[in-house]
Picture: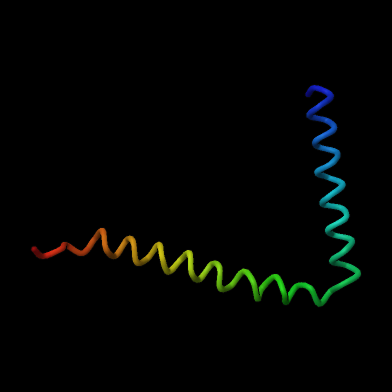
Length: 61
């Protein structure tokens, strides 16, 4: 591992530590994460299902 990679790794670990400390001081922020992620995953999953459905169902000409 070269020095640049070590610096990047330490920066990433520091960001993770700050994020975890921020979550511990503000436990109500978990609901915000869920409120944002549920619709995003729903839209992505719905689009994927629609795309797969359109691939499987034969079109009639």
